[in-house]
Length: 144
Image (cartoon, rainbow, N blue to C red; front, side, top):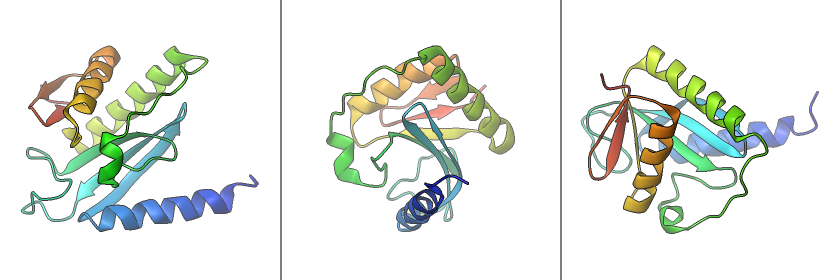
């Protein structure tokens, strides 16, 4: 058994509590190449405040490990990350996981309070070859 099981369990519980504070529940999460992908569902679709994205009940949080999408201050932090040793493997794993979620849950939104980060998400989504539409503040993945 991994020595980090308790740390991972505790981290997952903290993440769940952070999302609950924004009326979201964590549906699934995965760590890939130094990044965390978290799929969350809006528990109150009528509430479009906080982290909710119009057009979907599901939201993808794409964040570097040790950062939290629920911390609004982190949206303005510029982080520099070394390129993964095998970027193609990281991109393939991200694409596979996002496609799995879109296949299971339908359209998924991703956004940020920082427009530059939305631009970066769009570049990544385009690089992954996923279908999407873009609004100023958010992107909907899986739109046909």
